[in-house]
Amino acid sequence: MFRSLIRTRSSQASSSSVVTMSSIAQRGNERLLSEAAGSHSTDKILVLGGNGYVGSHICKEALRQGFSVSSLSRSGRSSLHDTWVDDVTWHQGDLLSPDSLKPALEGITSVISCVGGFGSNSHMVKINGTANINAVKAAAEQGVKRFVYISAADFGVINYLIRGYFEGKRATEAEILDKFGNRGTVLRPGFIHGTRQVGSIKLPLSLIGAPLEMVLKLFPKQVTKIPVIGPLLIPPVNVKSVAGTAVKAAVDPDFASGVVDVYQILQHGH
Image (cartoon, rainbow, N blue to C red; front, side, top):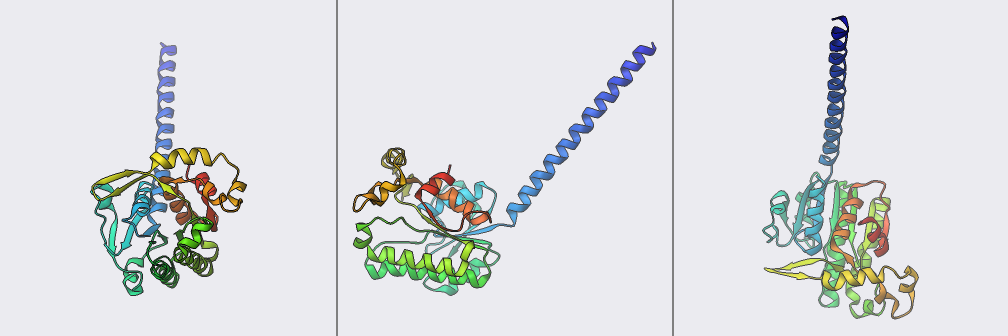
C-alpha cells in the first residue's frame, strides 16, 4: 500500500511539474509574440505610389509582416479588389504639390517611394526627379527615420535614349543620400517581372523574366561591365524580391544604406 501511495504521489508531482513547465513555456511564447507584435506596431510605412505594380506588392508584403501601411498617389485608393486593399490607409495627393504630402506623413516612421514614369525628357525629369525630391525633403522635415527609393539599374546606351528618366532617378538618389545619409537606401533593379494587373487583365511577365533571371544570375557580375552588351546581361528580378528587400530596408536599422544593386536584391529577397 505504501509503495502504491508513493507511486501515486510521485505521478502527481511529475504531472504537476509538466503542467507548470508547459504553462511557463506557453506564457513565454505569448510574451514573445506580444513583443513581436508590439515592435511591428511602432513601424508605420508610407508607400508612395502604393497602387502601382511594384507599390502594391510592397504594400502586401509590409502588411504580411504585420506593419501599419498607408499609401499616397494621385489616384488614391487602389482599383484592385483584393482583400489586402482594405487594410491600407489610402491618401490622394500629388508630390508636385508638396503640401498634399504633409497629412500622409503624420506618424510615419519609414517612406518607400515607387513613383516614376516615362514620357518626354522634361516630363521624366519632373516625375522621377522633382516629385521624389519633394517627398524626400518633406519626409526629412517631418522626422521620418528611413527613406527607401525604387530606382533603376544603369543600362548603358539605353540611359541616353531615355535621358530624362535616369537624370531624374539619379537626382533623387543624391537627395536621399544627402538628406538621410546612412538611413537612406536606393534599390536599383533591372527588369522587374511578376504578375502585373492592367485593368482586368493580368500580364504574366514572369513567363519571360523568370527564365532570364535563372540564366543571367549564373553569370559573374563582371560581365555587366562589358561595353555596350554588358548592361543587357543584368538579371531580371521578381517583384516579390524587390518588395521584400524594400520592406526590410525600411524597418531594419542594420540594413545596408546607400545603393543596393540587382545582385544584392536577389540575395535579400530570398
